[in-house]
Image (tube, rainbow, N blue to C red; front, side, top):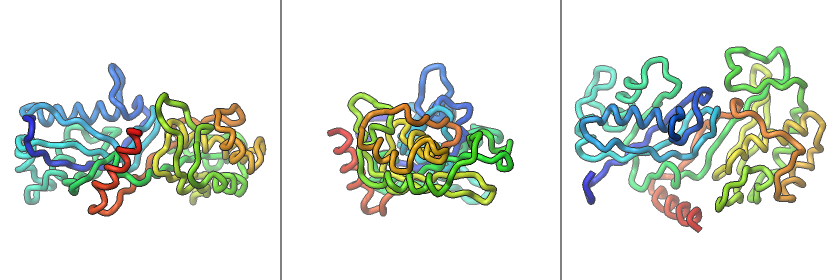
Amino acid sequence: MSDGEPLTRVRLDVAYDGTDFSGWARQPRLRTVQGVLESALATLFRRTPPAPTLVVAGRTDAGVHAADQVVHLDLDAHQLNALRHVRVGGGVPADAGAALAYRLNGILGASTDVVVRRGVVAPAGFDARFSAVWRRYEYRVSDRVATRDPAQRHRTVWWPAELELGAMHRAAESLLGLHDFAAYCKPREGATTIRTLQGFAWRRDEAGVLVASLQADAFCHSMVRALVGGCVAVGEGRLAESDLALILDVGARTSAFKVMPAKGLTLTEVGYPDDDQLAARAKATRARREL
C-alpha cells in the first residue's frame, strides 16, 4: 500500500472454538486464531499484497472460545476491486464486507473451528479495540452429574461437588463497580489493573448448568477466570461471601481460590457506542491506555 492511499475499513464478527488454538495472538510455530485468519487473508489477496492484518477487540487466551469476537482490517483499492464481483448465495454482487466474509469462509473450509459470521464496511471512526465500550463473557460450570453433557465438554468445566448458587451470585455482586482488580489479574508490566466491572451474575440454564455472565469496560489477563474461581470457592463453602471483596481490597494475588480452566470461558459479545461517537471513544481510550 502506498503512503496516502485511501483505505476502506471492514468490520468482521468472528466465532471460534478455542480448544485447538494457542490463543488469539499470532505466535511463531503455534496455531492461533489470528494466524489462521491472516493466513486466509494472505491466500485471498495473494495477487494484491501486502495482505491486511487484523486488529481485535480483545485477545483471548489459549483454550478460550468466542461466539462473537470483533476485528477490523483495512483494504486498499486493489483489494477492494478483487472483491467487487463476489456474489453471495448466487445473488447480486455483495458489498466489500459481506464479500470478504464469504471468501474467507470458503478458504477456511466447511469443518473449520473458526468462522467469520458477518462482514460489513465499518462506519467512520470505528476501531475494533479502542472504540469498544464493553466486553461480555460467559463461564459454564457443571456441578451435577446429570448436567454433564459430553457434547459440551470442550466449553464446560465439570466440578466434582454441587455449588451454592445464591452465595455465588451474592459474592459476585459485591465486586461490581470501579476497582483495582490486581488480586484477580495476572500482572503484566506497565499494564493497569483498574477496571469497571459492570455486570457479574450467576444463574442455572435450562439444563441446570451454572453460567456466570460478566461484563466490563475491559478485562485484564486471567481476570474472568480468577473471578469465577473465587465464586466457586464461595459456592463450595471454602470462602465466605464477603471474602471476595476483602481479597479485592488486599490488591495482591492469593492462593485462597483457583483460577478456573480456560475451556469454560466464552467471549459472547463486544459493545460499541453509536456511530457518531465511535471516533471520540477510540481517541479517549487510546489516550488512557498510552498514559
